[in-house]
Image 1 (cartoon, one colour):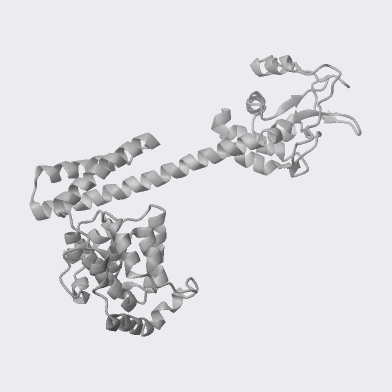
Image 2: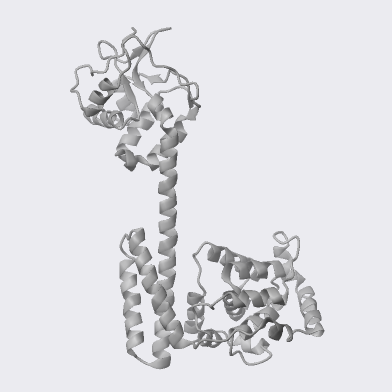
Length: 404
């Protein structure tokens, strides 16, 4: 039969069928093959369309019917011009675990209206295929033709979802930091209007995070919390001046460098677990460390809070810790004693920043006896920091609560 009908057999016409009828090719012309068409896995097409189904106004039940329909196609790749499946209504309902016939027909109509599949009606409305002749049933070519569009939309949806997840995690960490700093500020300075306002903002943010916020709402909350954290930091810690590079370099001596190498050699048993990740050791220069300090405005946690939470650091410091560079120098001295190799330390500083990495290291020193692999633990925290899911604030506040 050379004619392809566009009106349904014993079914009402709808807008989708009218548009198809208006766009139909001449009666005698069979569908032209697409020379540039590429083979598409039917399961890949189903997976991408399932991710992007809302953009095509399809439900999960619609996708279930499409999956059952694809299971009647004998091959995995969708290629060529013969992509017709012709299951009976009874067989299709059976494969859909006994779905009622009326429900199955409704979902098939939605798939056709969305342009995902097409109907190829026989003269009597039955679905069948003759040997060497044309088949009648559901045409899967639209699913293969639109695979690139399905995949592009699915990638966009996944990217938006990942961005929303990272943004929500960032706002959650900022809210926790603000709550901890507000509690500390109230203990140090009393119930001032600033701390009352910041405590109220942290509580409000916690209530908002119980809801399903969109990206714009989370971005606005992030900006508000960022300003609040700046205010808390300014109130708890005055602005500190970072020393020049030559001042810090002058503090190094040959004996100190030799002592560090000796300590690193004496802790081989602690660093053996890290050798699989660190084949080529890299030793940073002090100028690179000071440049990192110059480019960093400092962590969110006030220095005074860190010193109070990490009293062990004063044991290893060569002078009182009054500035951030004092803290980072102390961490540099303690690092080899903890069995943390230079490459692991450099990785942590790149992910966290020099001062933030020093805070984490000295916080680990407080719980050193509980750590089985300090280097592996530091690498895990550095990876989480690079993903935006770690902040040193809760770590410091936990130490303070433990001490209290």
